[in-house]
Image 1 (tube, one colour):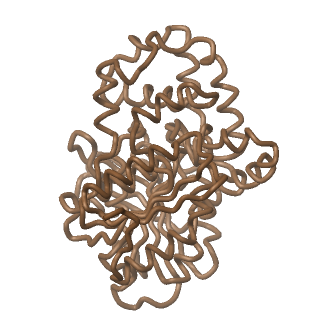
Image 2 (cartoon, rainbow, N blue to C red):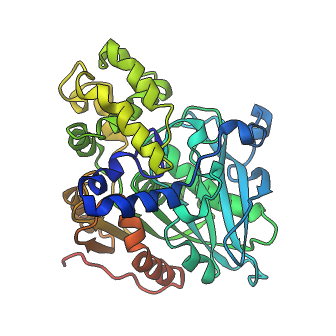
Length: 406
């Protein structure tokens, strides 16, 4: 979660903490993020008039081929219609990866990927990267199984509107409409059966897609939700991360975004001298190792002075906004896969365990994978194989296993 994301700067804090992780982390981040392309490079593609944005949610406005897709696939950058937080028509960008052969009928299941924090600025969109495919854990396995893979940017990343950072309803709609949009691509042949797979901020997005699916996209058939270290309890998340190096950036980006999305009075809680730092963080992306390092450097002034209040989670209207975007349990008939690393310092294991308990109490079948000595940055990649097997079973209609105690 962050102001420009692939996995926020804090997301990688644990990896930086140990010298033995420094080189592997740098390599992974560089591979995941590659280098973000400037927004101006695709400015025309991402622009949509009010008239173009108006229409059935999930229908395509335009699409274009993406260069160098994974072997045996076709890939497209897409701009599609969705609905904003106030019910207004908006355009959302993303990309879709399609197996190049097979699937002559409308029979290909869909995996909807929901990405972790890359930032809050428009040029932080994953679809703007020179190579966005490596950032999807398990992608090669998905396409080998014949699945269509959608990857939303979320509103405001790519497009020029403000990104509603950590706003679950906005993310969930964007995920569901990306699934709908795949049907507009020649050769996709998607079925209506799909699963959602997300990490961190994307874990929040995946869960909200599950919560909204029945009412927002009743024609789709959601088979399950898989989430790695999902941002569920924002109260605990913001309290924990605020006390850490790198963690204040999460708060800064959330405040910056919510002040614009909800007209919340940021001036009342941020020290005037810290506003320049908050604005700077909102302009930076964390889509490469260099972006992460830049973000950590930019955040330093907030270690000395930042908020006028000791705990933003108890101050209105921020408290209500935080609670409103803390995830409720999924509907009981939607099974869940949760992955959590034991050394995660961003989304702590106790938070994911508490969400699992809430799902179990609600009657949801939950598979919980806990991986020792894995931090926030790596949990999606380390759990991708198990998540993919779980998702494949859900897509073929096998009964969902559960680790809930009877």
